Amino acid sequence: MGDYLEKNGKTRAGKFLQGLKGVAPSILQLAGTITGVDALDDLAKAIKGDNTIAPQDKETALELLKMDLAEMQEVTKRWSSDMISDSWLSKNVRPITLLSLLFFVFVFCFLDLFNTITVAPIWVELFKQLLMVVIVAYFGSRGIEKYKKIGK
Image 1: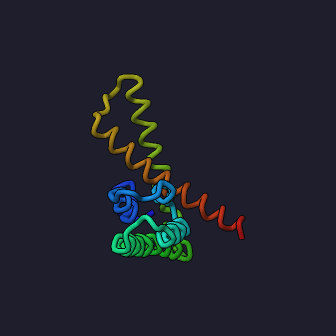
Image 2: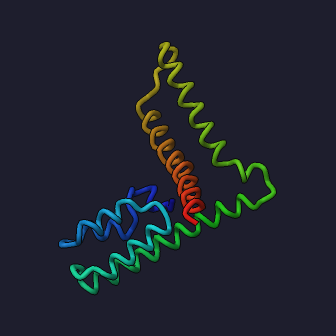
Image 3: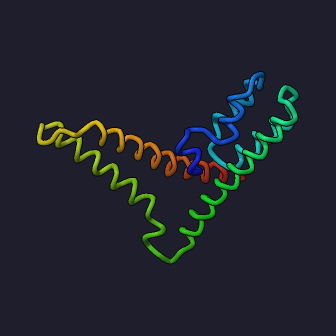
């Protein structure tokens, strides 16, 4: 997923479309389920075929979609180059990150359970957000990759 999507929970185009009045609910639903490049292409087709969006707003939405698409493609290229690399660390950085975050969460939960330490709410929120991003990026991207392979 792109950085903008991770930080805001929506793509640039999705955020723009939500602000417009009279946009077809099917387009807004499609914008809310974007998880990859193919979904952005589907959204672009839906926007182009919609008659309720003003031409100027369509143009703006499509430009924002291009920005979202470029960002997602760059992330995909980065992950692909990591997998091609001969470095063990670059190939395993995502699973290591996931495992280390889970490990620390379990340790903090265990220590908090026995009143050894009290975990401050700020750390709970931080780990919650980090884990959500990492788990969605790791399992979501792997699920999409496998789904595409099966579809072909």
